[in-house]
Image (cartoon, rainbow over the protein chains, first blue to last red):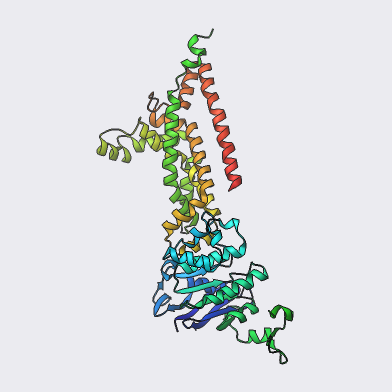
Length: 238
Length: 228
């Protein structure tokens, strides 16, 4: 297993207590209701928050170990992180943003072409749409040649059509990317579409039963084998 | 009866204005460079006793200028720590020199730079900083490449406030620098001396120069603060 996570952290209303791992080349979706500790977990993996106890290791390298008092700063973890909200630097153009920490500028050109934002390279973040900003954020994260890609509800603020396009783009990303991807969402459709593996997180703990409580099989349909018990069926059918 | 010297605008000695301008530019430049890291530290660092340091930085706001001037004279004088070091290095005195009033003015105006800079840095979305850290930037690089460029209007507002405060400084400068023409005699001291000498028209002309400059700069500060 390339990424091993065992963390505990006391939050205001509950305690995060998680132990799981993610193999290489896997897209692991952390799913669950909002406010369940998913973002805090991904921030701990990034080194932006410190667990109370536990260990986070990646391909044999310890990033955090409370017993050995190891806590590698985010700068040294070499991650790609796309935040839930837009976090492009407002004083830079989209191209400058993507090239900000790029290993090779030629890769930024390729990524811009691949994500269809080549014509926007000179624009500032406030001059483009939310979808274009998040495409650029993906380019920024990938141009760093990350060892691990963290995507924290990257498309939650976008409209349905744009979100669907970007989901496809993320799925396409998998080819040629050898690092694991941790993807946070509370959207079951998104999770089903993208995941190699799902970790349902409810109030800081893995709750396998949450998926079964939230979705149920539809025996008479092959196209849409799952339906949400709390959502209209149409929301699941693409 | 007014003398010709008292009524002719050409007879007004404008040299103190040049000294004032030089002092304000030097102090503003120096303070922005020195106060920016201090303000960044105070904006984001958490440590015990932080409020004590913040109060110390703001002390010049609460103390009478003569009190600050007195301690600076002691500190920069031949028996003071800074005065002794300065004399050992250069062989000269720090008091009654242009450099001396730059140092005094810098300390006196410190809160006028730190407070607006701190407010400007705190307005920056913390997620931008986190994004920079994840992209591999150190705290110093984040400060220079992310915080500073996104605080331009706050920095400009701080610079203007310091500049205006320096133009109006009087008590501290008089105590530390005296009134040496061309060296430490600034416009506010020249006005005071003109009044003492009952040259009211000369004092009036010099005073009048301050009003449009200060007013225009304050309007600019308001505009910058609205835009931030």
